[in-house]
Image (cartoon, rainbow, N blue to C red; front, side, top):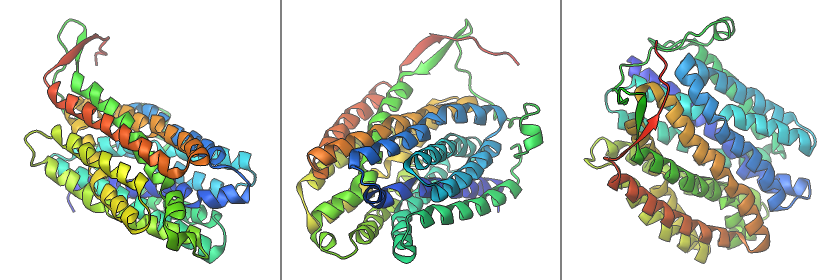
Length: 417
């Protein structure tokens, strides 16, 4: 196995683990709400806190990855997620559940800036394909977790078992990650990490300064961040409320003796289509002459699909939901490709950190707002709202292409080595 293949393997497995931890909640949300007599809005607020920290932590995680090394920081994140998942599974009372879930979100925030900067810096051949594989593994976590969580509820009669089992698996992967060696990447060590700065050697970077104390920030990068905010709302909203939507609108689930389990199974089947989209989204970027247009095309397809999801039930709903997953999940590797393109190599960690704060942090608003809409108007109305968000995303994505040659001149104090 080459060093680049090892980088893709480690980052992709970490992506799988991360999305597995953060996707358990939507699958067990209905059970937790019923167990504690909570409304969708109340349980959505708890989720909002965890998902907001999932995004907010991307800021310091990106800075730490640039400063101390991507692999080292990634190892800390996996260890923290595993321990936090065990705490969630063993928590008693809503307060302890909320605190431990917030901790899980904070450690989960480390993966995307650290894992993607690891790929962006260390993979030089077929980078788009590498990002596609990374995206596929994240989607495997997304679509298998509802099935896994529903099975845990069925077998062990408890939502806690899902978190405990995932925590144990996470500790095993953390050990594997700790033992792996990547050239020019610092390894995790309690003694060295806090004793001195021992970062990774960043590849030579292109100059973005003007020589007079100013730096040039691509306008396209700023608009990409706006697209991330809009897409984050769609990502978190659709993922969180698919099980509730299927319970409400699919009759064979509504009338089943185990609606939570069946909704989890159907969610798994629908999200599995995202595997194809994630792989294709990474693969095609190595072929496109104008990759900036691809996200706009994705949103052009996603907007009407979300509208049709809100207007249908039973088989048509399932078909539209599957098409949504097939197309929408091509966006993430395409977006990651563009973030890597428009950020300096020495700042990849911070660039991905900002990006995923907007996707997961601001996008987390979808859980509480979606809970409010679901309680008062029905979950189908929330998908209708998301169709308009997707339309706005399409317009913003088009602006990325038309502004690709423009830059913003910003005063900046540049640190000299």
